[in-house]
Length: 198
Image (cartoon, rainbow, N blue to C red; front, side, top):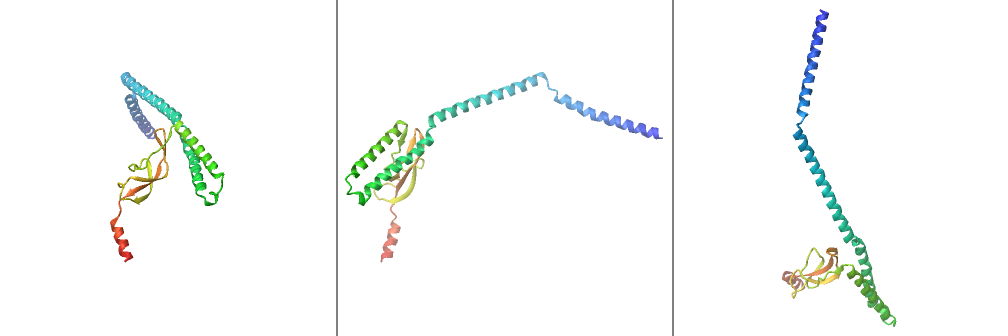
């Protein structure tokens, strides 16, 4: 009886072993591709690799060109503060009442103006150009509105005053112009003010 049980166990193991090997053979058969399929797959991989290489080459060329053309962008932006501070110093000294009696003040102010003109000339040589914005239509791409002024003579949205000049570096915006723009005079507010005065 024990021999019969052992034989049955061996048969079950043999039959289960055969069942496991059959699916493996089927998987191997499915995985086995024809030569044409392998060739198509290799061609597809090759084309993808070539396309990726071409994209990387183009990206590298574009980045190199931009680095060459706009490499001084950050330096140009930082240099604008030198010009701003020079102009502020000029205005501050010129409007100081205690210095108006000083005979050497005009010479000093003339020297500041010369330095300012030299800086502007250097900017222009290096493609840093000031944005002309006065009496132009407000452009949110180039201007930053700091305040609105009521003005009946100007169309709404027209730049009336330049608070801080803006600049371009080649075609890129280096810094927007800080401006005051015109708005329509609000007659309702005038009526309220007149009523509050009465």
